[in-house]
Length: 227
Image (cartoon, rainbow, N blue to C red; front, side, top):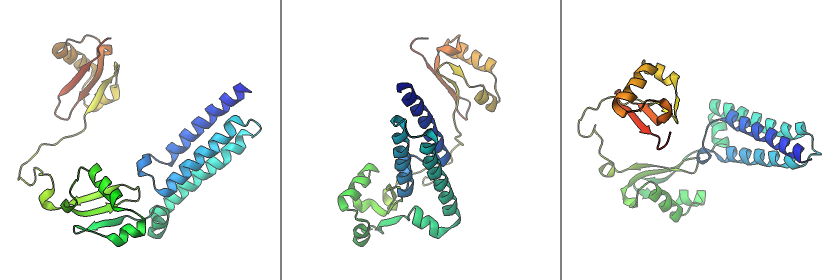
């Protein structure tokens, strides 16, 4: 009996994991109401057959797979239809326009001023007078457009030219060499070994916690406290 429960738990764990990955890579905070409902239903459906061994495994799997298929089909439909997209995922709502709070929109969404101020503070905005536009996204997050005089200064504002910044490539993570990333940098393991020995007094890759190479060829190395 106990072995059956454990086996069922493993099966449903990996099933739900595969289904969630199949549905997409959005974070929980980016889920629409529809996505969130589907995720909760899948969790509930997976929990029931785990300890109820009288329920055949396939009976527990079928509704989970059906929900996953429905989610994918509706996601594809929303890509092709503006109407379907607005019904399934909703539409963003403007809460502040030209620096003025739209009270009618707050009432329509049942969204109070305290919630608005809290989300502004989470965006490091403490004075509502600094905001030109605030848009409530379908995920529940707020997007802001600050008034021009309150936006951070950028190099473009100062007519400064900047150099290209690409991604850093992790070459070693926890003592394990990522040979694919080394190949992408058009270097080799021998070069990496020489650099570690010459500049960081490291003889063995296993001594490295993290080593990354940026787009300018600078090697960052963090050594393990103990090999």
